Length: 481
Image (cartoon, rainbow, N blue to C red; front, top):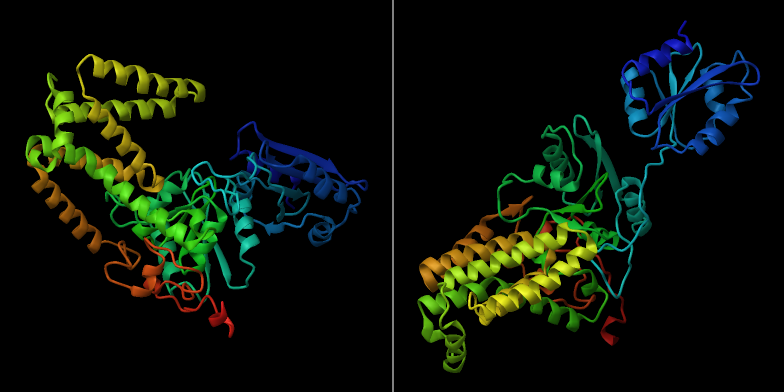
C-alpha cells in the first residue's frame, strides 16, 4: 500500500527548493490528502475553494474515482508517474496525493505573475484595435480565439528547452494553410536541443537554415489582429510562452513596409504611406554613402549651389569625409544605445545633451561639419520608419559607408547588385523573400508596396499556395458600389 508520506517524499527528494510547498489536510471523516505546488505561480484561493473545500466531505474509504468526482476544478488530469508530477508542479499546477493511492490528481490552478493586456509600444495605432500580446501563452491564445471563431483553427503545443520546458504553440487554419507546413515548422523547432528558451527570438533562430544571414526569415507580430490576419492568409503562427512577440512563416520582406493601420484607413492613404516608407529606407541607406562618394570620387553629381554651401562648411576640417561621417555615425549609435539602456528620464536628458551640446560644440570646434550631422540625423529618422527591420538596415548603412569610402559609386552599385541577387535567391519555407516581385505574382502586387481596396483583395496571396484561395465572396450588387 502506497502511503501519503511516501508520495510526498518521492517528490520532495527531487524538488528540494523551499518554495515547493506541501499542504496536508484531512476530510471531516478522516481521509488524508496532500497538495504539492510551487509558491508564487499558483492561486492559493483556488486551491482552497476548488480542491480543499470539496474534499472536506470525502468518506474515509473513498477510492480514487470517488475523490476525483468531488473536485470542482474545471482543469483536472490524472497521473501516476513521478516525472509527470514534477513537471506539472513546475508548470504551476497543484498535484493532489491521496493516502493509499499511487495515482494522483493534477488541478489547474496556475496563476503566474503577468501584466495586463495593453497596446504594444512598437505598434501604436490611431485606428483599429489596441490590444497587444503579453508574456502569458494562455492569454495570447485566448486573444487569438477571440478573433478567429472557427473549428478550422488548430493549436498544437510542444515544449522546448531541456531545463525551461517552454510551451510553444503552433497556430494555423486547417484547409487554408499549405499542406505539410505546420509539420515542417514543428520539426525545425524540435530538432534543436537547448537548455532554456526565454523568448521567441530563440525559436526564430531555430527555424532558419541560415542563422548567420543578415535578413530574417520569420515575420513578427505584437498585436493579435495582425497575427490573425496573417494566419488567415495561409501562414503558420508560433506563440511562445514568456514572449509578447509572436512569429509567422512564411515571411516576405514586403511585410515590414506594411503597418497595422494600413488596413483600417483609406487605401490611397495606405499606398502613399507605404511608398513613403520605401523612399525613406532608400534615403536612410544611401544618403551618407552618396555624400562620401560624391566628395571623394564624383563631386560633379552635387548641384553647384549646394556644392558651394558644402565646401564652405567643410573647409578647414582636419578629418577626411569618410572619417568625418564614420565619427558622426559612431556618436549617434553610442547616444542611441546609451539612451535606451539608461533609466527613462536620464536617457531623455542624455539625448538632449547629445543632440544639442555635443553636436553644436563639435561643429563650432571645427571637428565635423553641419551637413554631416544633418545627413546622419535624417538617415537615422528615415530608418526608423520601418522599425521591424532596423537591425538589418543599420548594418547595411555601415556596409554602404565602407564601400562608398573605398570604391565610390561603382562599389555601391556592386553592393546593391549583390544584395538584390542574394535576396532573390533566398526563401522562407518555400516562399521567396522578395515575393511578389521575384518571381512576379501580379495578383499579390495589390497588397505589396501599394494597397488596393478590400474588393480587389478577394483572394488570398497566391505566393503561399493555399488550399482555400477565395477569402471574399462578392455579391451581386458589387458593380453598383
